[in-house]
Length: 389
Image 1 (cartoon, rainbow, N blue to C red):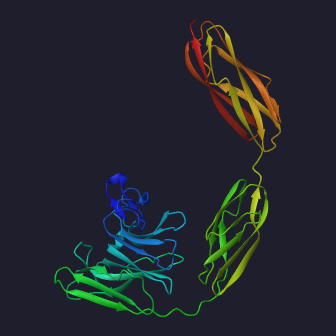
Image 2: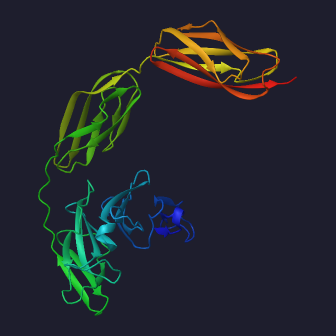
């Protein structure tokens, strides 16, 4: 992983080298995060070693400057797609830097350690401070606001920074060992955090939400897993024949109706099912019509006429008369429709005749053709070139 810190091209990239390939052979790089302010040179990488498919975690610093923006973030690589997601660890207002991430595989917990101003009352600076910790569930990443928990502090010299830990992931047998340095005294500081052994696994309890739960077709719905108990597998039934095994899937309903959604979640300890009856309501889109013109551009010599064919097409079972009008004509030019109004379904057409006089001003004009049926109104544009001869 590396950063590119060039203003609008700010980004962090990731590439993979397969063991056994020549030293100069790498897979194509992927963008982990991109945009102004997203890149800096503080990067700490870990992999979930129990996940053979290649899940990678990166604690990184950004270059954002607004107080509510994330100054340190966790980037997570999806092993299936190779895409990256980002999660804020601490904000600019917290003045954090030099983050690392430690993975507790046994309890499935992420530990992030970083430098921030030492308590109490020390201002933001680049010379150190104290070491803080924040944690997040591995399966539902979210770090709390604020500094987190103080883990290393030099009360006499508030300039501790550059926290580091083991390259390997941790568990209840290893605990977490930390090492940091005081930039002024040159003394090293260490801390050890015991990890409580994970209890026996429990079966998950299924729950979910969706947004939106109603709308017109095609209706695209995003589902969010709210299950507790650390499920590892998901089986969704969207009620229209569609299924998914993603944790937070998206599904599009193409046919109007009410749909019952069911999710079954499971882990090594068991499974649970949640059903929401008639949870999604997809309604047909309202009747409507569309306008089209042929040709879309015409020319005429002053004193003559030209015609356009205006076609009205019914969509979503629209029926009824549609009144047509045209605007944008120059003085001493007229536009008439035959017939007017037009009635659909399925399609109907009207001839728009534009008549000019010998004194009509030459030039290029954009005409607006409008169709109105009750509260429904649509317009299209056509071009007209009036020539002297």
